[in-house]
Image (cartoon, rainbow, N blue to C red; front, side, top):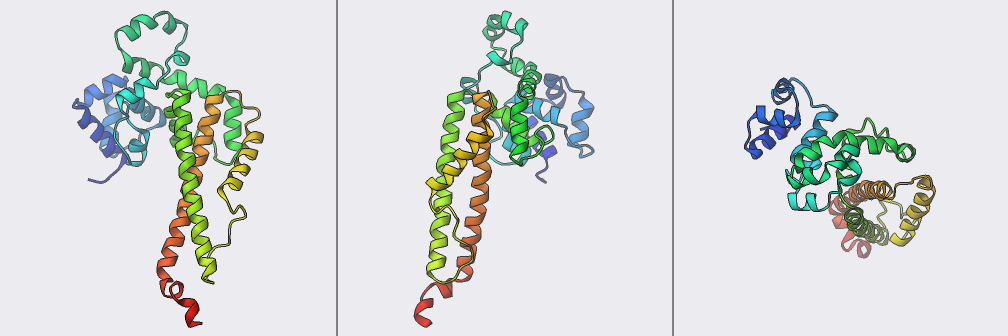
Length: 263
């Protein structure tokens, strides 16, 4: 079966062990909308993707890219979800009864628009995002959904994930530097040595840039989310550079091994 987003939605319905009609009813979506997507006639819009993710705890990476686990762990998701900011005044008055009935999925679904409003109200965040060259956040649905996904977590949880990505970037960048040094010592230069010859120097530039770029950002949680996305983006970049060098070394192995002695 072709790995399209329509097929992944079909897999979600199958994994939930519910009918297509039930799937639509839980999200308050017209059945024809889902049927047309499953049949390949239409593509899902941003609002529908958000409803699927929030109603059924579907991992955005699986739904949009077909990678990773299909569902976010319920225990992890619920323990790290802070519902307070997403409730309007009437929600707060009914908080005890809502959560007492454990109507978590209903609460998540009804809070979808509220979460979107929270992000939209942080204009300085949107301006900063565009300023850094990542494009219009309102139109980049994958990035928008990623921010919403991280925003369901507590600040400590997001910060812990940031530290994980920090360590990944350090490893990838240092590996890249090491391979560049090997190539240079073998007199086969495929890539100029980076201006920042240690990870610490590279990260100094990050922090300097962040200090300037985020000076008008009032929401600490959104700031760490943006930093997290920045790290993930750069990890992909340096990993691609690293993979390129590994492939090149494989092609040039005869020159790299004993090349100097033949000269």
